Length: 267
Image 1 (tube, helix red, strand yellow):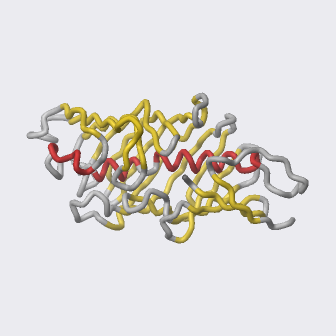
Image 2: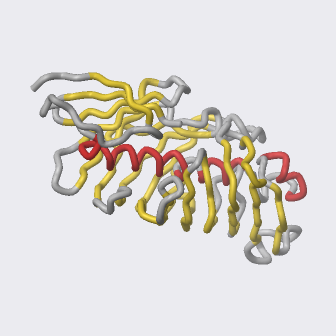
């Protein structure tokens, strides 16, 4: 089989025809591209929640650790966590704002803290009916808690493909391990390794699984996944490999399928 290497925009790719039957078509990698978009929106949510440092820093200063507006904080923050959960309502301004990790976000985010989440891992749940990043919108629910140095997070979501209907979905379990920033109170120096076992549906409704074969590097120091590798297995097709690179903060990744590799730039 011929080996081809092409660069495609993750936003603009479309199903064009090719004279070469061996050349990858848009439908061959659609699930991988849609998974990359879904991951861009949702994998950074736990690092964002951790950066809020709920319970470890004064609640009234939470607005200095995100570009979102803190609409309200409901619960007994003085006696937290002994007096029950505290719920934080965050609202990103219309048109979006640049958050602590450099990603432009809009919409809303509700976080329910059962214990401190900041310097220590803690326990939380979060949800949103309108959580946007770089033109993509998600509605999702997640919850997580700590097991020693590992933070286990369960996720279920659905997505809007640009201005289209709700279609894509991603769900499953993720395990975050802090590698940098754990002992500081700075919101923008947190780095994690992430492994996951996920299932999803792409914009056409086709199902796939996505598992890490090499741990991903994510956090608040970069708006993209810096490194790591995922194996994507769409129903009825062979495995695809999504390679996030070797550590550069540039959004450049690559998809390998059927002996061919195409470049993918995450917006």
